[in-house]
Image: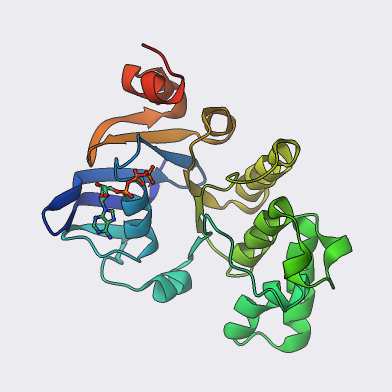
Length: 239
Ligand code: ATP
């Protein structure tokens, strides 16, 4: 299967700290890829390199054949790359619907069409009943779903999810995972996740990359990577 995104030989240095060392990653179109590793492994750095908020010291990021290495997060958004944040950032004073309209209006979608399209995303994430409530009234799980609706409103082809179940109460997690799976299946969106919960990862990811101290230890199918002893030690407490 063709790759939608390729990270090629990426190194990131912060002063004397090497956060990523010659990392390669291929994200297959229509699949979900997980970035794994212990604390300080470089997961967030790799995520930010893909999102465009960190520029690599060397190496390239190629999206659908275009070199996007030097592009800002907002211009990546025009290419079809969207991200969510670990700490959700809705406009608390705006309603749920208005929050989802923002990316559409920013793309010059006429108001009426933006309202209709935004309502379809609010419905997709199961927040129709909350459409006219201020975003600040939402629970953490509902905010995560609003984040997903806002990401959909950028009409992404690649969606980067940062700890999408972080801080969410356990009963709400399956709903969020189901939504992410539907984004992939029904809308063909390719997904990259950073996530600490192995149970979540096993239910979500097709492919995975495992980093340690900025280097790729193993990459392949999620099932293969989950069997790696380094992964088992960190995520399952083995050994
Ligand atoms: P965690 O699971 O703890 O979030 P991580 O795998 O996401 O860790 P990164 O946050 O990518 O790891 O950090 C990789 C390395 O780079 C660490 O040694 C970290 O201290 C360092 N680092 C990350 N960001 C910066 C920065 N802005 N300035 C200096 N060092 C940084």
